[in-house]
Image 1 (cartoon, each protein chain N blue to C red):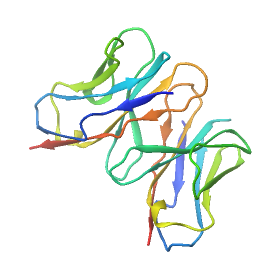
Image 2 (tube, rainbow over the protein chains, first blue to last red; image 1 turned 45 degrees about the horizontal axis):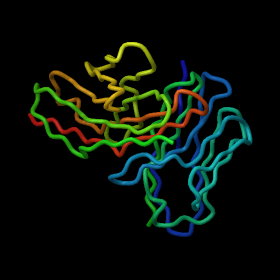
Image 3 (cartoon, each protein chain N blue to C red; image 1 turned 90 degrees about the vertical axis):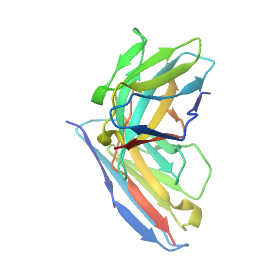
Length: 111
Length: 114
C-alpha cells in the first residue's frame, strides 16, 4: 500500500535560518506531489506542485523553494526564514487523477 | 478558476444531534468535489468525493454529502454525531479536466458538546 512520510514532525527555527523539509512517498511511481501551508486559523494554501523529477510549479511567490531530486522525494526549502513562514506544512500526492493523499505534516515555528 | 466558500468557521453541536456543514463553490466549468477531515495536528483524510453520477455521496464515518448543481453547493451531513467527530472539515473543488490542483475552503471547525 502507499504511504507518505514527512519529517521532521515539528521544528522551531530562528528568523534568518535555513529550512529543509522532506517528503517521501512509498508504494507508487511517478506521483504528482504537492506542498501546502496551513497558517493558524486559515485554510490550505498550495505552495508548489510537481508532475515529475525536476519539474516544479510555484503557485505563490514567496520566501520558499521546492525541489524534486528523485521520483518519490519532494523537498521544501528556504535560505532565510521569516516569521510569516510559521505554519503547518503538508505534503500530498496523487496518481489516480482525483483525490489527493496527505502526509502527517510538519509544524514549523519561526521565532 | 474555482473558489470555495465555507460560510461557517465554527459549528458546535450536541452529541447524537444531526449536523450540516455548508460548502458553496464557484466555477465556470464542471467540477469534482471533495470533503476532507483534519484531526488536531494531523494531515487531511478524505471523507468523500463527488465525481459524477448520483448526487448523494456516502463516505466514511457515517458522513454523506449532496451535490446540488443549480445551487452550486456540496453540503456535508451526518444524522448523529459523536465526540470523535470533533475536527476541522475542508471542502475542496477542482475542474474535471486538465491539471489536478485542488482549491480548498477555509475550513469549518466542528465541536461536539457532550
